[in-house]
Length: 98
Image (cartoon, rainbow, N blue to C red; front, top):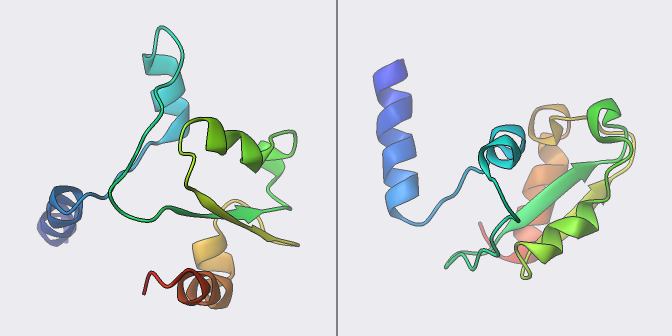
């Protein structure tokens, strides 16, 4: 299925999608991270029970993507789209991005 995933990803990126992959992105940069101004709405689902980011503050993303809409999900871990697809659908509907 790799071909199908690549085609869909290429189409999404061509339409303005982004995928920062934070850890690699942070290691790659030699200086401060840039401020991004994507042409599409940015919605962040933040699992408050994510043990890998327990000391992180999702609000700091605003330093790099000022227009981001952040939805905190209590009791949810690192993959809210898999653990709470209902919350993903609700957040996107609320933000009008569906």
